Amino acid sequence: MTISPPPAAVVEQGSRLRDRLAVGGPLANARIGTVPILWNNVDVPELRLGTNAERILDDIARTGYDGTQLGLGFPEGEGLRDVLAARELRLAEVYASIPATVDGPTDAALADVRERLRLLEADGGEVLCVAFDGSPDRDAFAGRADDPETPRLTRDGWRRTVELLATVSDETRAVGARIAFHPHAGTYVETPDEVEQLATSIDAETLPFCLDVGHYTVGGGDPVAALRRYGERVSHVHLKDVDPVVLAGLRNGAVAGFGAGIRQRLFTELGAGVLDLDGILGVLAERRYDGWLMVEQDSGWPSPAESAAIGRRVLAAALRRVSGAAPEPGVAGGIEA
Image 1: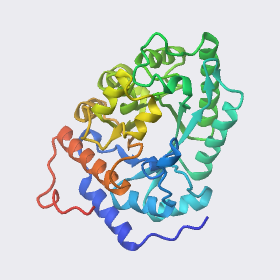
Image 2 (image 1 turned 180 degrees about the vertical axis):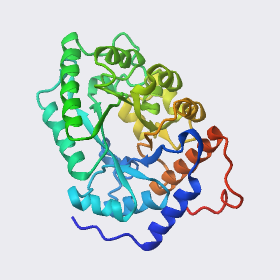
Image 3 (image 1 turned 135 degrees about the vertical axis):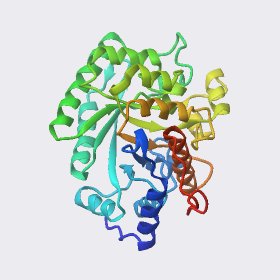
Image 4 (image 1 turned 90 degrees about the horizontal axis):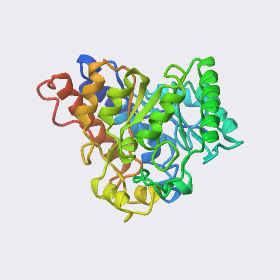
């Protein structure tokens, strides 16, 4: 795959905007990334816009992000390293889904995750973000997985899960990368109780967490409380807001599962939902968090570039509030879209 060099204006605009949106204080070293699922939804094929990698990466660069997750249709290896460098971007993460049943990871799961780890190493990525894949039995209970009828991992399923994660953790560290487990709505680790069971089953050094604050909210948890409980174990963060109307539909059964919620735009732009963004950043600031903050939205109603730009600016404003910093005169207005 050949991707053309970006227009000079894209690189210049991105560099200028990153400088303008940067903050000092306790979160000055946190990096800001985004996720290409906004352009091409990996889970719901009809929500894939067919946007090519060149356009996606140009949009990510010019809207002021530092990095990206590996997306559908992206080149691999040196090809990807070169196109990211040309846009002053980093590969923050590669996402790896674990296929599973109530009896734990399937026989193909380890090979699937190893392929994603291969891409992480080849592409110069930083974090292997691991989560259970969605399954029809849990999809139907997303947002109300505290229901006693919810299918759950068996005792052997937990054992197999922990064994796989320990193996993947060892192999990830062996190639010089980091791993983080991502609790996910519509999967076997969604609720706070399930996250806690995983946390007590495998040590924090072996398995740090990626707290996706949107998924944790859908699962019935308080992400601010989770950040306080798990502390330094949370080494990677996905920032995702949740639409209150769609969430209520999941809770009461009017929205028939996670996939249906995504089609109704369960996840919305930062600042447009129920998320306590300032509270989340405040806890991270207390520990001077210096990992990635990945602004994520699983499809939206506006154009992807518009949603990405909104998320970046809302986050910048929240970071300034938490850091007690004000933008320089003349910077708050007139920033390019």
